[in-house]
Image: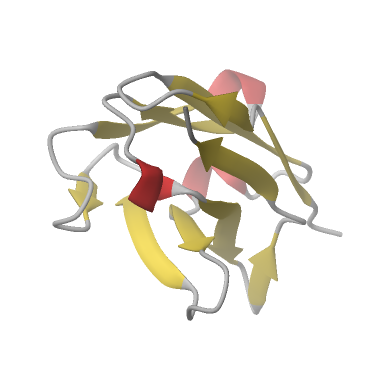
Amino acid sequence: QVKLVESGGGLVQPGGSLKLSCGASGSFFSISVMSWYRQAPGKEREWVATITSGGGTTYADSVKGRFTISRDNAKNTAYLQMNSLKPDDTAVYYCYSFYGRPYWGQGTQVTVSS
């Protein structure tokens, strides 16, 4: 059974930082590709960043240079460090992986507002 649990969301002022975590259950984590997605109110869910099992990373243009995805296989955890946050980054952030089928976490709210 695969389970993904996000944490670390909250309210932050523009220009601030947050670090999201995605804890994963199961022995699949070290061989998995992990991704972050987000969904803003009234908008479709969009891809944010991906990290491969080997540590290769890719980012959406909207977050490139501001966000950093990483992973700690010993802790079965993926992270999303978000810097220079903007109001447009306000969304529910979801952790995603595929292991036989797609798995999503429950999401964590990030609100960027003064």
